[in-house]
Image (cartoon, rainbow, N blue to C red; front, side, top):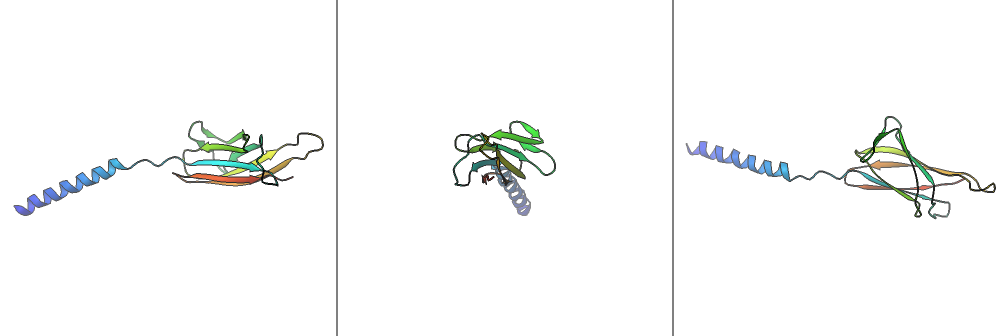
Length: 128
């Protein structure tokens, strides 16, 4: 009889502890990325066009859902931020078109390696 009570108490305790562990786990934060576009002298490039795309499939963002690729412009710090839904690897291409007849088009590429609870920072250097 004591053995039976002990087993009931043991399994009840085990279920209680497992229940606490099950409900106390916090969900990981979605992956984030910051792309910084710089020129040959490592100075930030404002107004560069940044394209994020996947080799196959779609890019999945937290707010806008799925897109084939995303195109955005960098801010005064040469940066653009993203928040994604899932861990993934995406390609990044940055371009800055010439602003006058004397200028030249510049471009560069990079990769985003996204993991939950992390912000991946990628610096893309654009060159002629």
